[in-house]
Image (cartoon, rainbow, N blue to C red; front, side, top):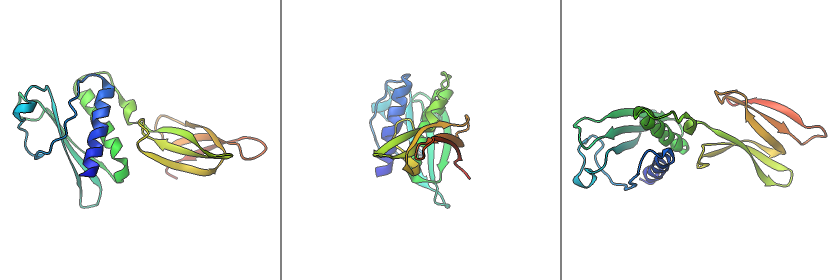
Length: 179
């Protein structure tokens, strides 16, 4: 339940960032399988319904549907999956982007990308961190040194460059996140 409320908060903020919606951020519990929209929500154009659950492999799944109070069937449905619970923010970003795409708005795929930056910890000690655009999810990739100017190596965000300033001469390194 706690994860669901945090997820809801991120999804609401993402939809507000898109600025196509006047978001009603009420959090209510309903059966996911129900596509009926209650009377109090019948004046809304769209209702978002989701269910967070673990699958048999222990991965976090989000079943999602976009509902119109005026239609009997959901407008859009999809299931999303991630392997690490702490990356739930990326599920919310993916859903917001998919809603945007469904409605035919200009692409906001940037919302799904990682952000990379150097974080000052103490004198001569920084970390290189990857994060989502809200900085809710943060993971330190490289620690214990003076690392500056991280930059993605390409659009796939599978590798990055950074400058190490620990020696007498700054050195530029390339890191592949998967190897």
